[in-house]
Amino acid sequence: PYTYKDKIDYLDYKTIRYPGHLDMIKPLFDLGLGSTNPINIKNKQIAPREMLINLLHKTLPSNGEDVVLLKVTAELKVESNTKIVIFEMIDYFDPKTNLSSMMRTTSIPVSVTADLIAREKISSFGVFTPEEIIPASLFLDELRKRKMIIEKNVYNKS
Image (cartoon, rainbow, N blue to C red; front, top):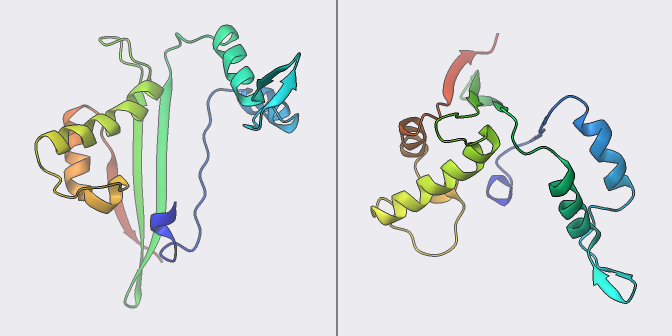
């Protein structure tokens, strides 16, 4: 992300959906079905990505009890000491609300941000990323209130 430019030397992100997900999805993207550039099919313009999304919604199961695993590992240099900071979260399907973990982990942070704006805990106006205007401790506390707990551990690098 742009807000980390010149602050982070290396950033990598991976999402694992379920066993076999990559083997099934990658060939579709290799064929160009992730493209947002419209193509002409029988005199109609359609983006391959829109077609793929439509087909996947019709064929993939949407009612699984899923789990989201989050792990962020950062190496932080403070003066002559190097620390390893690890953030971890495991979030599960919520049978009380019938929300999948994927739904929870994408919607709850956004709702926290909206709630903080409504309660005037955020005083900035305009377009910002959450990390630019919400103190991390406040954000993590609000997530915790909604049973989305991110654990933080700090270790000295040996």
